[in-house]
Image: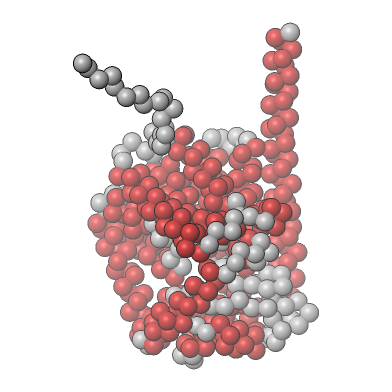
Amino acid sequence: MGAIWRQLREYARLAWKIGAYGLLSGFWGVFLWSFYTQVGPRLGYLTAHRATANDLPCDKPECDFSVFWPAGHLARAHAYSVLYTPELFVKAASAMVLPGSRLETFFYPPTMLLPLAAISHLPFEWAYFVWTFGMALLAVGALRLARLPWSVILASVLSPAALLSMKLGQVSMLGDALLVMGLVLSAERPKLSGGAMALLACKPQIGILAPVALVAQRNWLGLAAFAAVVALLLVLVTGIFGPGVWGAYLTLGHLGSARVLEMPFQPLSNEGWGVSVFWMLRSFHAGVPGAFAAQAVASLAAVGGVFWLWAREDVSRAALVEMSVFLSLLATPYGYSEEMTGYCIVLAAAAQRRGWRIGMLDALLWLWPGMALVVSVWTGVLLTPLVVLVALARSWRRAGLPVPHLLSLRPVLPRAQQE
């Protein structure tokens, strides 16, 4: 009888493994096909100076880029009050891209205007393809500098999060690649590492924990390079666009970003793609103050976790990078699934180190950035931070780190008083 049960368990394990590979290949294939069918047809619009009326941007792809391109034009015109006032921006941007386009608002920091002003010189569709696939090539170069195998790089740039980033015309794939490269090379090439991660000032939520890792290592050279490049970016922004852009961003831009964060959670909106603890609490109907308080706790825990990890000498560099990327997703109240490209990079690297042995949990974690919105719509709540915590807990355990016990299972009894 025991032999029969053992045989049944072996069959069950085999079926589970086949199911994991089937789930992974099936859903990943759907994501790849969706990317091809939405982005591919727009290659035919490269001769047009504006977006095509029957295939408006943001109905399918190019949603974020349809904000970036007009933002670059407005920055070149020094129209900062229009740039950072949502109603004025949507009206002006829609006229530039195509009347009737469904556009989002712009509240990125002025550092982002440097690349946007440059790319806006090209016609819209040309600009999108140069921007998106140029970012992809730069991301590949960054990951090669980090000495990641080609198999990991290929999986990363075709990952669900990277496909979403490219489809939207976002910078997240390149930003996450720079973060991974910077963390990997922080000890041996500190100047390159610090300088590369400083470029994340264009999208600060990606690199928010990078200085913490450098300080924890006492990597003063890397930190100096980081500070120098950030200072250079600030000088360039002020010199090219004038000091007025900072005033508009710190007043109008701040109000715009606060408005987005304080909106009620709607699964079908952008928040359904969210990754933050703040939006997860909002999806459970927590008020804004309570959600911000929970996010503050999560952010402080992420900062403390990264500092504690990088100050240790008994954790491998790969594990440090992996857990730091996961913690960075929990550190900010603002972030979306396309910013999980770094998460996919470190998951692929971990799978490669295990000889590409894939289990059901690996498949689910990998596919999550592409499934998050569907799950949010089905359930009405955002679960992505919990998924990130699962990935973090698994990495923590595999690194052999101590598990904190907040509550002891053994009751604490009072000592008997001596007479």
